[in-house]
Structure formats: C-alpha cells, structure tokens
Length: 558
Ligand code: ATP
Ligand code: MG
Image (cartoon, rainbow, N blue to C red; front, side, top):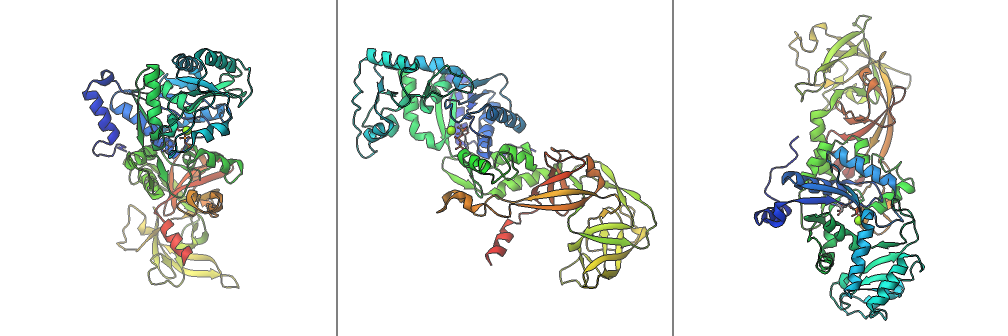
C-alpha cells in the first residue's frame, strides 16, 4: 500500500523545508520519539511515531528513540520492551540510537548547578501547597518565596545536600528563578528538581533527586542535537520555558513544534485510563483486542501498513479534533481486502444434505484471494453433507430474499448449483435439515448449465469441518466521547463489545497462526488469537466487511 497520501506539505514539512533552504544546522534533520515508559503505546503514539520517523525518512535525517524516564514511580522495564517491539512492528527503526533521559542525569545535574551559579535557580523549602498558592493565577501576579534570595553559595550547598540524601521528600525543591509575575504560569519559577527516595528502573538507588519533565525533556533534545522536537499542543505554553533553558544554558537550540494530538471517538487514549481498564479487569490486558493500543490492534488483526496509512490520512493539524473510528476501520478493510485469504466458516449452522451426490469427498480448488493475482488456491473438501448459515435459507422467502428457498437455487461458493427440494422439521416445526439436489454440470469454472442464479453462499463440508471459537469484538465504548460525560468513563463501556461464538471452519484453518489475516467470506475479517492452537482454535474478529455500527445504533435508539 502506498502509505503516503498524496497531498501538499503539512505545516511541519513547511518549517523543515524552510530550515533546509536556509541551511539551518547544515540542513540536518533529526527528530526523536520520546515515550514515557509508563504504559503501552496507543494509536496516538503511533501517529507521533509515523510523524517523527516519517519526517526523518522523507528528509534523509535520523530519529532517536528516547525513553523519558524521569519519574521512577510509574515506570517499568516491561513497558520499555513493549514500546520497542511495537515501534519495530510498525515498521520503524532507530538503529543504535536508543537513549534514556536517565542516561543524562549527571549532565542534567550539571545544568542545574550551572543555573544556580548564574543566580538563575534556588532551593526552596516551601511545601508544594505553599508554592502553588504563591504562584497565584494568570490574572494575578504571584509572590516571591521567602527562600528566593538565598545566595549562590547557599543554593549550591543545599542542592548538593539534596542530592546526597540529607533531606526528606517534599522538604526542599530546586526552582528556576524567572518571573513570578509572568502571565505564563510555567515561567513563575518552575520546579526543576524534587526529592524522591524511589529506586529507578535503570539508575537504581544512585539518585534521590529527579528532574521534572520540563527540565529534562528539552535538555535531552539539546544533548542529542535534535533539530525539530515535535510534541502535542498542550506543550505550547511550555515553549517559552523550553527556550529559556536553551538561552540560559547556552545549549543546542532544538526547536519545539506543536501539533494536535490524535483523538479517536468511541475510545479513551490516556495511559492512566487505559491502565485503569487493565487493572480493574474491564479488559484482559494491555493487548486486549478492544484496546486502542498497538499491541491490542496487532492481536485484533490490524496490519502495520493500515495503521501507517491511517496516520497519513489523518494528517497533521494545528487544532484539536476528533477522528472517526470509522476512518481507521476503513483503512484496515482496505488493506485486508488485498492481504486476507478468503476462507469459509459457518457460525449458525444449518445441515444441508445433497441427496444425489455420491458417497465421496471431492477436493475443489478455490482461489485464496481474488484481489491478489499471486494468491494461489487451496483444496477444499466437498461432500454430500454440508453446513450453511441458517440465514441463507428461508423456506418461504420474503420479497428481497435471493438466497436459498424451497424449490429455489443458489450456487455454493467454488462448487455447484443446488436446488432445495425438501425441508425436514421436528415436531415443533423447527427446521432440522434441508435436502437438496446438485447439478453435476454446474461445477465452478466449468459450468455448462447457462443457469443464472441470484446468489452464491458459503458452506463447510460436515465430516471434515473443524471447530473454532470466534471472538466478535466491537467498540469498547457505546458513546463517541466517553471522556466527556457526566459520570465516570467506565460506565460507558459497551456491554456487547465481546461476543463469543463457535463455528464450523474449513479444514485449511487447522494450521492457522497469529499474524495471519483471513476473510471469512460474507462475514468479516478474522485473525488467529495469540492463544489459538490447533487443538483449540480461536479467531478474533478484526473488522466487519462493512461499517454496520451506524445501523446498530439506529436500531438501539428506536
Ligand atoms: P498519554 O496522555 O496517553 O499518557 P503522553 O503524552 O503522556 O500520553 P508519552 O509517552 O509522554 O505519552 O508520549 C510520547 C510521545 O507521543 C510524545 O511526543 C507525545 O506527544 C506523543 N503522543 C502521545 N499521545 C498522542 C496522541 N494522542 N497523538 C499524537 N501524539 C501523541
Ligand atoms: Mg507524557
């Protein structure tokens, strides 16, 4: 699939091309993807990954992977590993440029010392609450902390003692000395360092002071020589502070550029909320196929190509907006249409007996994918006892029913035309099985009958059919904006987001494996679940063949 949707330059590309024209940094382009290892990556991160790695690729630059691991409380190695796996799976590579903010703790400490020596930072003994109170609000100038005018010597001494573990958590912080009356609250003497007696997943017990996000992020960009530091809009107000550090420290002038984060309807995307869903067992894990995580999407059968294509379709915006989940599903369908192997599975079986078919099994070659000229074909057993979908038979047809009826004809996919002659019922009048005759001359590919039948239905030969569990996933939330409701977002979980069915499958699916894509024809796209095995086949429904959600909602509302 050609992922790069053909369109004019986005605003970030315009900035980059302008920089290249001006010879800024010698025309060098260097971006980074800076995840905090406090959860699994979601589709919003995928957007950011495609953007950062995509720009570097387009302008022959580089992209660093940098773990923003400045908060030892929430970060874990498990997350680091999953993040790396997901980025690779999406099709991107950072080569050997894998960094951690924690690698720079010594350097960041030296930066802080430098600010103190310039009289631009001080140790404050005020409590967190007092600091917040003294900052006041954007309408009112803040007031200076009583500790703001400590001497450089006092500050150097206290800061080094903070580092040496002489004070308790919360007893002291290091703050930048900027402007307590700035209309930008981030410039009202922001906190640079806090005391935390927590072991870090990489530095262990070496540190008991940790830099705040704002003091770490931009400085890491500079250390790595990042030319274009792309972040989401909520950091727009942090930019003056980002630039203040660059000026005061005299470090590499990385440029912060903000774009609108990707929002999707019918889901939540904050890692904090996703973690709640996992911890409180609303889903089976971070990779539950209903989760908007990359690992969830992978398990559900979404392809890396389709996710990259979606990211490109969404584009790069300067204003926040919400993207319709249907656009993502469209992108998945489009890709799977080309990649998925067509197979047959029957979910609600009706037994069909072909009374004039010999007592034998015949193998029919059925093409794997009409969209793929190299898709080949497979041998599918056919015999006198089949299963078809109950829905595909109506004894007395309604007006627009064109499938099998009593005395009517249909084609069995890849096989023969049949005609139904008899309907066998139990005492209550429910249909037990139907009896048909087949037309031997009508074999697919060599049909000599010239008969025009109105429809083709799928089937599975009964004696060789295998059983499998189908997990029918739907949207995780029943409202478009679960985040913006009066009550807790978890109350809006779609109670029908997982339905489990059993099906009869054609035997070629016996050796199916996770990572393979199938279309169960006339039904939906499916992929083997991670837990699927030949003894116990499990398939996840990736996406339906058409967008049925609108209709479902209409029905519910009536
Ligand atoms: P969350 O709010 O989900 O916890 P985050 O921004 O805290 O997300 P990080 O791990 O800090 O998560 O994000 C890594 C990178 O991914 C950042 O550059 C961030 O801007 C970007 N990113 C996160 N969410 C989105 C999103 N929804 N759309 C685009 N980019 C995003
Ligand atoms: Mg973050």
